[in-house]
Length: 226
Ligand SMILES: Cc1cc2nc3c(=O)[nH]c(=O)nc-3n(C[C@H](O)[C@H](O)[C@H](O)COP(=O)(O)OP(=O)(O)OC[C@H]3O[C@@H](n4cnc5c(N)ncnc54)[C@H](O)[C@@H]3O)c2cc1C
Image (cartoon, rainbow, N blue to C red; front, side):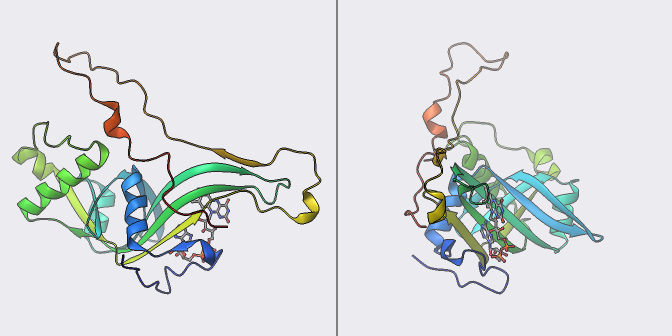
């Protein structure tokens, strides 16, 4: 698939061998994440705000209250940096210095735009809802006119984007191998719990299938690289 050219902003300098610019891998990381952090500056003050998102093609959508400072600021055309992080494991080395984490992360830089066309907005909200729970949009009541007015939807293109991936064991110094302490990787996995029915749930309705939440969180699709 297509590789995206790094810019002066997205060129990974620290551990460049962990950089990924392949769009298919970037999409795969975004599709497995649940939240993104939006970083932006208002009146000289940086903010980093966590929020839900969805990906469609080469863009992500974020949404929220039309009154939200974050959404109003970004809709005003200021620059934003969005990050998505998947933590795959704790990396325990023989020295404190070489401890690390295995991860897959994406950094997106750019300007978001407000989606105003009603059809596009509905489609973006569908994307966001189905990103959290595939097929959910098709099961539930769609937003009404008032809810649509109360909601802002922003699209952020994946034009300036980088991914970084660490996998594999700790990178210890040769001299440290004789130290008698356990070293290796402790995998970290997101787990779906047992669904808890809402007190108002109508009888006879099948419980949501837990399998719908499995988005391959247990498998890093990226080849081992050290
Ligand atoms: C879960 C997790 C834990 C981490 N813990 C540490 C830690 O404790 N200490 C530490 O120094 N680093 C840690 N990192 C790595 C960290 O994200 C940076 O990559 C690293 O600190 C280098 O920062 P820098 O500003 O020098 O990057 P530079 O290489 O100068 O960054 C230049 C550009 O490369 C891209 N880039 C950099 N990092 C990432 C990334 N993680 N994902 C996608 N694109 C990226 C961005 O586009 C960025 O603008 C961690 C990463 C993750 C995901």
